[in-house]
Structure formats: C-alpha cells, structure tokens
Image (cartoon, rainbow, N blue to C red):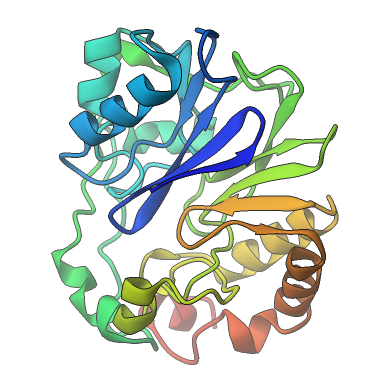
Amino acid sequence: MLTNVAADLHCFTVQVVNVCFYGTPRPSSNWVLIDTGMPKSAETISSAASELFGNTVPKAIILTHGHFDHVGAVEELASQWNVPVYAHQEELPYLNGKKDYPEPDTTVEGGMVAKMSKMFPNEGIDLKEHIHPLPADGTVPEMPGWNWVHTPGHTPGHISLFREEDQSLIAGDAFVTVKQEQLYKVLTQEQEISGPPRYLTTDWPAAKKSVHRLQKLHPKLAVTGHGLPLAGEELEKSLDYLVTHFDTAAIPDYGKFVEEKK
C-alpha cells in the first residue's frame, strides 16, 4: 500500500514493514529511499518507485537500522541502482559483514510474533563499497532540510530522520504504531502506539531515552517502521502517553534483554 503522507514523502508497506520514498513525484528525478523492507521485496519496491518517479534511480538509500526487515532488499537494490547506502557509524559493523545481531528473544513478554521470532534472521550483511557512514554533522545526504537523530536502544546505531520545517518524523523502529509482538494486531494493523518491537530490542534504557528525545522534537507527522502513520493531535497525545508510561507500556515484564539490564 502506497500512502502519500506529505507532498514529497510517501510511505509504502511491504508485507508488515514500511519503507519511505522521499522526493516529489514525476517529473522530478531527485529521490531517496529510506529502508528497504523484507527479503525478496526488491521488485515490489522497484515497481512502487517507478510508479512515483518513472525510470529514474534514487540518489541514495538511507537505513534507519540493519535488522532483516529493514534491509531485506538493500543488497539487490544498491547493486541494481549502483547508489550509495548510508547508516549510522555504530550500525556499520552489521552492514559490512563484521558482526551479527543478537538472536531474537523468544522468551520476551508478548504475543505470537515474539514466539515466532526464532525464525527471523539475525545475521549481518555485507554491502561492501556501497555502505557509508552518515555525516557527523547530522545532515542527511540528498535530503536537504532533514537531519538524522541517533535513537539507539532497538539497535546500537538506530536513527530517526526529522525535518524541522514541517516537523515531519521518520521514526524507524524507535517507536511504532502497532503492537508488533501480537499477530492479530499485526495482521489487522490495529493502530496503537508502542515502543520498539520487544523481541529485537536489546537496550531498554537507551530505547526509553530515544523516545524522550523524539517527543521533545514535537513532531506533527510520524511515519514508523511498523503500523500506520500518525499525525496532529493524535500523534501528540499518543507520544506523550508513551513517554509517560514507557516503563509499563513498552518495556516487557520479562525477557533476556530486560534481565541483562537488572
């Protein structure tokens, strides 16, 4: 499903995860892809891109983080388009073949998806010459007016993207708008603000600080890695609630990553 959330921003759902297209649709050829969805989704993403931008390739690919459902098509697309891929310096070891992520926590409090997470890949990938660190000054390549915000917790190098001009936020998995651990809610996309997916979040104190950091930006629009976009008063109230109740609404009562921090 391709959703126009701003004049130059589209959210595209690939199975259960969102990618973003930044750029004004045709005739413009200046566009950027943010995240690359599930494995084997390259053709689906390419088709959506063609619908928006014709037979042009992006100027860059930006990754919020390197989990399998956000980099599923990045190797194929980066090679096909021959474009640079940017991620936070602390995420690079998972994108240049040096490190694997911890295995998903199937013991964490949650629903069926959490129990199924043992099937999710945790291996890093190697983007070779395509991968580059994001600029240290906080700017985002090929996205004028946008800045990246370091929002660790879900992964060490997780980032979100923010544009001050219209207070638009691409949050990645720093917070999401669906209970990603619960299969029924994932299938129905029942909207409910939530912390990052529990089965892959390794540092809950950092995740809490990251949500506080994003709330202080006062976003008016938020596109998250999972779930439907939120905007306006509904976003403000939901994000305020999540910040105030993070310990009970987001952090699980039990799980290996919770126990490790006690």
